[in-house]
Length: 541
Image (cartoon, rainbow, N blue to C red; front, side):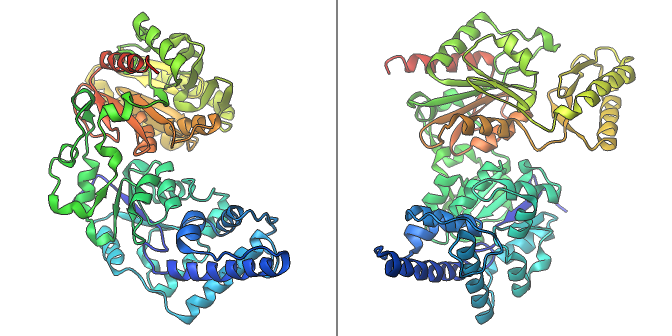
């Protein structure tokens, strides 16, 4: 069986797999129009009907039931108490209206059988035949009932629905919790997971989950809305895409930034074997911007920077990576003009000392420890593991002390095993020991970098989630600020996937390689040149 670079595809239900979206719309319209008529009679408020374009798509589509009800009512300036999920359908609360909608929806399902999109079912069967795992992630609490009614329940390896979301206290779309949970249950990293959605809130959730590819299904002629919301590509139907096209997507390489400073890339620059007949797949226009458009002409920028291999060259031992005075001066000027964060695998204290600039946000241990510019956070689940990490570092030191060149670095919330100076014959023994430790201790997970293995707390956190926390805490909007992340390591891919289509990812690598980044710089020296040019281009502002 062929091995594909992606291992799982997670589908939304309504509008992607089943043709129940229209039934949801009918149910919501019935409930809301009835309630708005009541307010017209009772409160003398002018009646304005609930519509698909102005109301359903903007405020309700893709969201959990109560969240959708609240979002629509808020748009009309109607403030109701949330109530209780057990509220009867005639109670004037958010939950009461949501429950009334659910009753009407179930009535509609009984009146007519659930139809499916045959092209989606055919696509799912092809995925399963190729050994690709398949999940469904839906905000609907009726998900299981709908799948059973349609006779397709057995097509999915994992199902995360509204009931499971409530039980696990997952945040609803546009947060990415539901897709993260589905991927975790499938046992597949988000870096090898595809999300398929038809709603604005759904594609944004896929982007916030940092899925490797987010496909928007534009059944409502809403391609541009889905692309703006974070979809990488949009299609009108899944018959327009196939496994080979998705495979090529995963082999996409960042473009050399200075080669495309003024020249906007073409699809053939991004996909070497892109077939022109595939124009039916609409690629997000964010991929077709030049570096000039993306960086040098923007008024509001937010910079997120890795340290080792990005601001300084990779060196044999961690303590030798010193920031040059020139690079420090550039970052200092950059921080006077824009918000800047340095997100590193080093401890926060160490990275603060190395950079030595006050007006910067520092995130250490891959974002587990954040402070600066009036904000701070330490991931709560890591503190209890501190004694275990100290013991772990001591045990590794004893077990591996016979290997010349090994460096065991205790980093407060993690332990790094550097083997850059180790003879190749010892690498297998090092990896075997570390993997055995991880298998025997579920409290930790393994992170692989450039000739370094890092034992981290097993928490759902990474550089991407750290950056999103910083952005949200600072109140930065994706729409009016261009978020730029520059990094060189596998751990930076979590950030590149998060900001893709709505920010700029720049990989630092001397050679072309597959990455979720948009552009590539060859060295820290090119990073210095880029930052210097951005500073100079903003002097006239």
